[in-house]
Length: 293
Image (cartoon, rainbow, N blue to C red):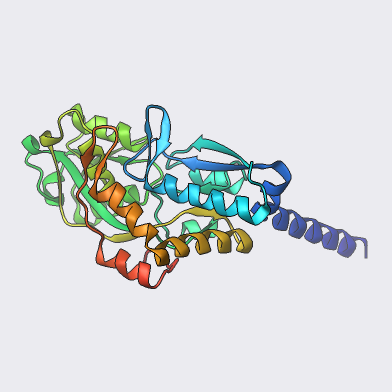
């Protein structure tokens, strides 16, 4: 009898803790603060310009903040910003250190075991950034060469799998963040950087000598980007989803896209000139949080 009572108490405590951990809006209301995660070099989504986080995903985060202020009737809500990496973004979200992560995160089933995803807001695929002088034109050219990617990304997993399947004997070196991986290629310590193509274009546009680099190879897979929030937090997910869907339906989302992907962007005021993909246009018409296959 005592064991069953103890087990019931433990189960109740666990349920209560889980419910509390997943109630982001209640947490924000109680603390008077929302904490947003940002990336330092995920151009044009979330990156630093003069020490300040800017980008397409940062503007999506800011839209959520405005919705939270209205929902909780807290016009003076404190907004804290925290830098995260590919490696620590999920743990910091899961333990409640950050409330929302809008960067350049792929929505996939493996990550959905630990976090929830808002509706998708971009689609991309793994390609290669290399110096034009290296004559790297595709994945076959990487045999027995040093290639870099970023720790904690789906791209690193994709490259390891491809390397094994094709017996290319690549030496895959993982960097802490995208900027560090780019430096390995720029400095000649790696012949290519495998990453989401849009991030490669962003890094290339802001390089010291953009004409020195090119993005090559076909996309190994198409992946959706989405903002992350606490697992099974239905109330907060509805607020975030409603915010993004509202932007999509009003036309504001497309204006934001034009600003960050078609017009000149800081710090060098170079445009990426990347038209909206068919997948994203379809997503705007019928918003979905479907993960990558």
